[in-house]
Length: 499
Ligand SMILES: [Fe+2]
Image (tube, rainbow, N blue to C red; front, side, top):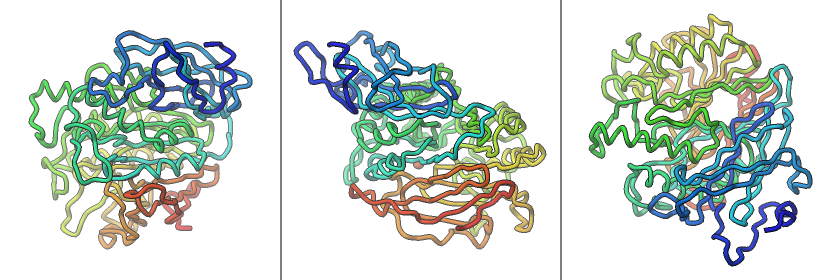
């Protein structure tokens, strides 16, 4: 193939296969992530047959050279950065490139070439320099995209927002067996080994709406439970279903981590080693914001009282932690640095206290680790953190919450803010319901929605605006997106103000 053909290829150009060329290998699209002032991670995976049962996507044994390019324009008239990477068979031909030599706070386009083919074009951007004010940032966050529960229309609508940054807070895929009678069906039985996780990622990533969301902006992604197994807790399983020996469970976690790394645009420092994977990390965004991405699965103590919704005194035990002692200390150290106006915690499970009428709390969320939550809240108050903003996924409905110094006293100070995104599809079409469940016993919970969608935030020095975006249906494709409700969080004033 002539270099000229490559350079002149337009957006999404596909070079027609010629004899001797392999089938189109970019069936899973492209992605970028982890933006820094001068670098960003570029991702792709070669998989001409992404649904193959061996998890290798139709690639034969052997490593393959992949060229990559970054340009300031979608026409690639001039290159800012370029190079060659190796897609290794051992890594399912996934590629993680750290593209360097980029300008801070700037927008770029990127693409790959391999085996005579050119990938779709992705759009990405870099973060501002640490001391720079930077521009206002449109950041979207989302979670929980069960392929069987519906079409990924919300991902498409996210791409159309042309955001500066996307946070994905877990349940990027679901591990369950294919079940008939759903909108779409998972391939194969419950995923347990590396080949099955890789194939499941292959199935998800063939979705054009998901590919569009990846191609629209850099992502900061963290996994939650279904990326491995429902409600797992570090080395513990909440349920013994399917029954697994200790060795099988260890192998499953390692396989899930490895496949997660292979399929998300993470930095190489997150490369897993067995069941250990460094996912918690800080991403500074100039003087505007600092993103503290948390891992609330790997280091947690088991759910208190072995349960989900429980009345459980053990939930208050001081020795219990959700992030684990090391991550708690790391987070408080980071919050004490006061790098940006907004300290954004990108994490997985419901943070605010939420009791039902019987006094039960969700033992899988921070309510099952109350002393740990209290240490963090007191910690950021003691460190005079001006604007702690917790972002949450997991529960497939949208919420806006005031975080209270004492949840048993509604008059106690509001010490932070929590925004909870709904799901992309999980729980299905949903409803127009907006009455806050348990509002009578949880007056700090200010908003609820049962629509599928995501949250659009507009982050400025003076305020964060949050628009809860919802689609009316996921059981049919193509639904429009609407703003269900909007809130403001003002600089120096924790809590949500309804707009
Ligand atoms: Fe979920």
